[in-house]
Picture 1 (cartoon, rainbow, N blue to C red):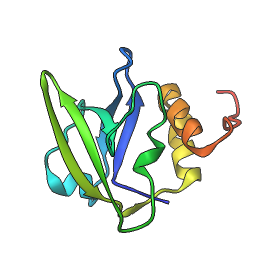
Picture 2: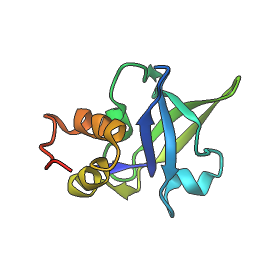
Picture 3: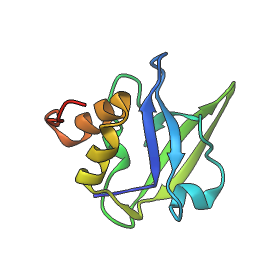
Picture 4: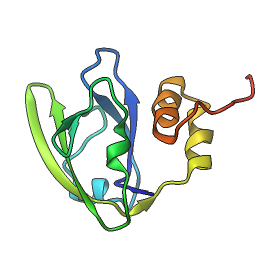
Length: 117
C-alpha cells in the first residue's frame, strides 16, 4: 500500500482528521499547500468524519483528491501515492500517540496488541 505522506490524528471536534506532520520527499510536502494543523475533511469526495482515512491508501502512482479545512477556508489537492506504508513502522509510531493508534488500527483491521508502558 502507498500513501501521500500525511500523518493524521483524530480531532477532538469530530469534523475530520488533523494533519500532525508531513513526510519529507512526499507528494504532500512537494505541493507546499498542506500545513500541519489543517483538517482533512474529504477523501475522493467522501466525508472523513467518523470514518477511517483508509481511502488515502492505494496502489503506487495512483492519485487521490483530498479536501482540507484551514480556519474558514476549504481547499482541495490532488496528490499521487508515492510513499510506501509499512504497518510495523506505523504501529511503532502509534504506541506513542493513542489517538494516532486508533486511526492506524482502523486502517489495518483488528486493534494492534501493544505491550503496556
